Image (tube, rainbow, N blue to C red; front, side, top):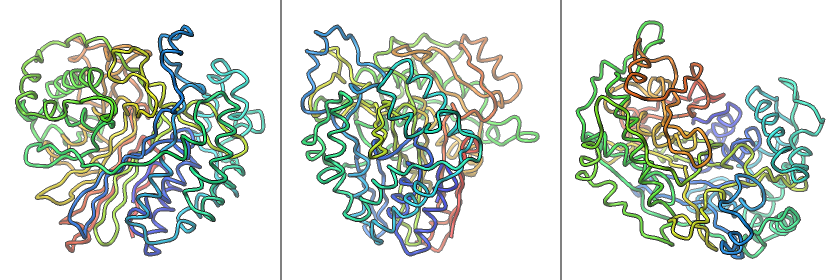
Length: 540
């Protein structure tokens, strides 16, 4: 079990010890994360799953992302003077899909009752958890932003997450009684109540009062979808992820470009003296940055809800296309990225679970930006995502807003298969950085041959957009690379945004390795949490 907060890992481990499945543990862990990391995820967010079913010997993908309300009218919004959707506020709220995905995954693979799975989250929300540095900083940062951007609409957030009217003190007990009551209701009457029962009615009333378009009928109509995972062979290892509207195809496209280039030396990935210098060499970092910029341009050009438009997935993952893009890369100089048509963002959790039978879950769930839209219902304690801000109002854009449409998502869970079986379960948070982090972790494991702890702790970079709808023309990077690498990138024309070592802005990646085939084949497990997080790996 691995998650970005130790209390969540402990909850998931407890479920495994009680005989629960990997899916049971994932639901319990996700529910706790929605309490202790409400700035990143929660009942008002979306989720994407990859599940390895050991009995079936197959992998499934579950799309738990929500849709735009049926009443949205992009033409009316344009006529009102909007050129783009705001980043936060009621217009950005789409139907929350995570809870429905919990119900669907549990119906297929759950062993323990839902009440048992939600019990740890209920206890923490009702009785409290200690305020940590990340939570406190997120609350204060969001309070300042919401005060400016939302005005009186921020009242619910302040009432729930800043009830004392002052910053939390480190270690102070944080209680979320309204959220506890909502979780207790779901534990008692079932998860469907979120969409069809009393909780649905409460949500509809609160959303209408806030000016959001999500109606009770939108909640009742929402359904998850089962899909076929995407796969790509990367130097003999099968990398899998979730298909669109997930950005998984973009993470695989980065690998598709990199596999057309000469592989780096495994020796480059081994940490140096004191672990200060590590990671691939200058050439491989430069190539990775350039490959990521090309893949993100394809994301902007194509990625949307496949029910509303054709996405050339086969072409993006075709080896010939990867080689073509690799040929465009100048090995000695940074290229200017194409103009961007999608906004940047983050605010996500990633968790992984493997049970004693060898079933495995790779799950990513998110509110999008920190505390999402900023709209929080004080009666239910639910904070709503702002995924709708990713929709375009340009009628010619592939991701243009439409009723019932899912927006493109930054979220992408991952697994690596060896000889057709799970080898590593992995993923990360990090918004638009996720395709780059995905590719870096896979390259470290496959090209570098390092262990999962080294892979997730290695120094990291990502091609970043400095502002809303800006192209990824800067490189957020840690200084822990080998001497001279940052200077070399700058000399190539990369504009560097150098962060502190282990800065959380470079994403939280976590991984579980099924060593020697994992539990189903008589092997064992190795798990690693990103040191940039408050995470904990644990096994039983």
